[in-house]
Image (cartoon, rainbow, N blue to C red):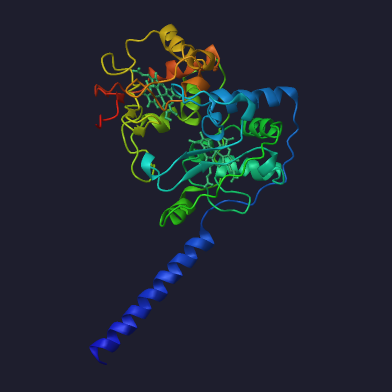
Length: 329
Ligand code: HEC
Ligand code: HEC
C-alpha cells in the first residue's frame, strides 16, 4: 500500500471513530428521564412559597425579569413584567454568545406541562430535551426539595402573559455538546428543619447560588476555587467590573468580624425601594450581586446562611470587589 493510501484508510477510520463517539454522546447524554405527568395542586400556601423562592430566596427574578431603566445599583426589577425574560449580555460581557433568560410566562410556557417545567428547573433540559446552557443554575437546583420545585411551578403558572419574543440562543461549539454532560436527573434533598440552622444555611447557599457566584469558576462555569473565597469577575452594565467577595469567616478578608445583625442589615439595606433612588454614574460602585432580590429573604433564612458561612474554613485572601471603568479620553 502506498503511503497516501495508508493515510486515507487511517483518516477514514479516525473519522468513523469520531462520528461513532459523537453518536454515542448524543444517544446516551443527557442522562435525563422523561418528564413526569405531574400535576401541581396550587394551594395558596404553595404559590406563596414559590413567590418567595422565585423573587427572593433563589432570585430567579434576577435573570428572568427586565430591570427598570435607567440601571440601578444591583438592578431593580420591573414588578409589572415578572418572568418576561431579558437579554443578559453577549461576548462584550464575557458570555459565549448573546444570552437570553427566556420568558417564563404563559406566552412561552403556556403549552408546557407541569412535569416539563419541573424537569427544566432541576434537570436542565427544555421540553424537547435540549440541554440548557448552565448559566441557568440548574446544577444547583438539582438538590431542591421536590416541594420547593412544585412551589416554583405553581407560582410560575400564576404569572400573567407577557407578549415578549426573545431570540433563541445559539451557543458556539463545543458548548452544546458540553451541556449534554451537565444536564442530569435531580438528586433531591429534604428542606432542612429551621432548628438546624447550619444545615438549612447550607441548603440555601447552594440552591440560592451564593456558592456558585462566590467560588472561582473555570471557563466552563465549573466551581474550581476555594468555596466562598470569591474572585469571580463580572462586567458591569455601566462599565468597570465587580468581583465576588470573600464571604468566608476570615476576620480581615471575609465576614468574620460581622455580627449576625450586621449581616442581615446589609441585605435589608438593598431593598428595591431604597435602590430605586440610586442610579449609578460611571465610576460609582456597582454590583452584579442580586441584593435587591435577596433583601426580601426572611430573618430566619439570612441567619441560617450566616450560621453556615461561619462554619466554612476562613480564607485570608483579600478581594477588591469593585473596579471602575478604565477612563478613555
Ligand atoms: C443566572 C441566571 C438565571 C437564573 C438565576 C435562573 N435562570 Fe432560568 N434560565 C436562564 C437562562 C439563560 C435560560 C436559557 C438556557 C437555554 O436556553 O439554554 C434559562 C432557562 C430556564 C427555563 C427553561 C425555559 C425555556 O423556554 O427553555 C426555565 C423553566 C427556567 N429557566 C426557570 C428558572 C427558575 C424557576 C429559576 C429560579 C429557581 C431560574 N430559572 C433561575 C437563566 C437563569
Ligand atoms: C451573581 C453573582 C452573585 C450571587 C448569586 C451572590 N453574590 Fe454575593 N456578591 C457578588 C459580588 C460581585 C459581590 C461584591 C460586590 C458587592 O459588594 O455587591 C458580592 C458581595 C457579597 C457580600 C458583601 C461582602 C463584603 O465584604 O462586603 C456578601 C455578604 C455576599 N455577597 C453574600 C452573598 C450571599 C449570602 C449570597 C446568596 C444568598 C450571594 N452573595 C450571592 C456576587 C454574587
